[in-house]
Amino acid sequence: MKQVMARNCGDAELCGNAPTDDNFLRVDNSDLLIVKGPRFRFPDCDVYVVYGDEPALRDNTPKELKIIIRSRFKVRESLNLKWYADPDFLISPSREGKMIIDCWSARELTFEVSRERVQKENRLVLEITVDGKHNVMTAPAFFMNGNITGIDL
Image (cartoon, rainbow, N blue to C red; front, top):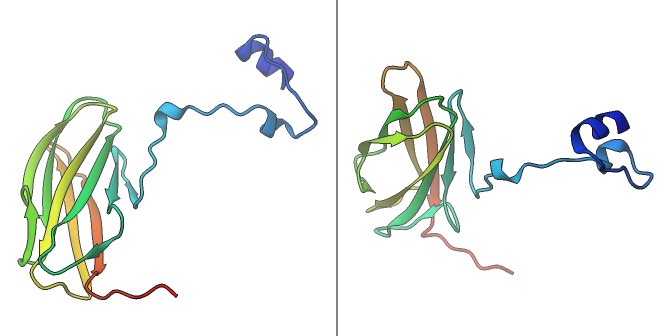
């Protein structure tokens, strides 16, 4: 371990009697992306679904839903986005669209989702395809019925 450190870290030294892995740990914080919601991994990108404070939908109340697309593409790509949902869902700014994403970058998209009459389970799916490629990436979003509230005891 000392030889590896001498070669890669110059005059850094080990300290303490703890195991080697605890003494020498390098973390690259530039690659970290911490979000509150699920992450879906695909060969060329990661898709994060961020619900905000809670994944609940209320009658006729818009809910903000953020989608973060983190690219691992080697070149700039054109992505096609399409929401699949029941017809009574209102999704703004649009149910379908196209966007450009640069190589090794991240883009955050904000949508507002609402429904006139919320069901007990409210599901919608974002489909992402890339022009000229056969991959289909899907990111489901699930909202609970927020009209039913409980009291914390």
